[in-house]
Amino acid sequence: MNLGSLERAIMDVLWGCEEPVLVRQLQVMLNERVERPLAYTTVQTVAERLVRKGLLSRASSKNAFRNAFRYTASHSRDEHVAGLMIDALAGSPDRAPVLSTFAQKVDLDDALRLLHELARRAGEQAVPDQDQGRQPQPLS
Image 1 (cartoon, rainbow, N blue to C red):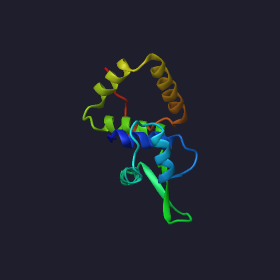
Image 2: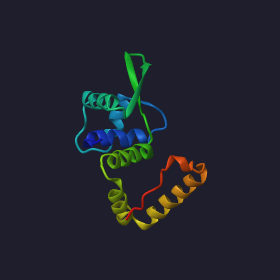
Image 3: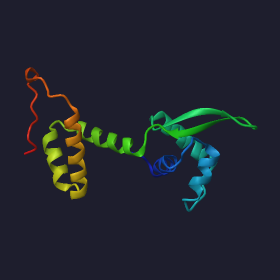
Image 4: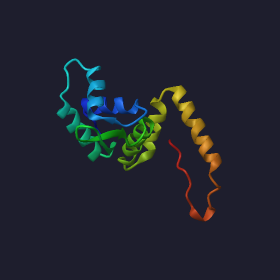
């Protein structure tokens, strides 16, 4: 899912927050990062767009002036980025060449971390039933 620059900025702010925030708080935090101040309605509109995309969740929060919403990220940054990677992989009819290219291009330290995590995951899995006939294909 492609995000616009303001959507990315909002996600970056909310991924760094410990608790859900009001639009006004989000606006203040964003305005500390940008050259041109953002209007309250702009921040609110983009936050609502992110809710519709499933990236943010909101909860009603009554304050002294009116009903307001508190926003929080629906998933962590790590979960979001991993989801993007899975979606990109799912978009390929033949995953082997994609995985092979990724393995060749990824930084060696990241490749070793991935290899470690895959080995840990494989150790947690039960041995597959031979009748399933599912054998991993080499990456070529």
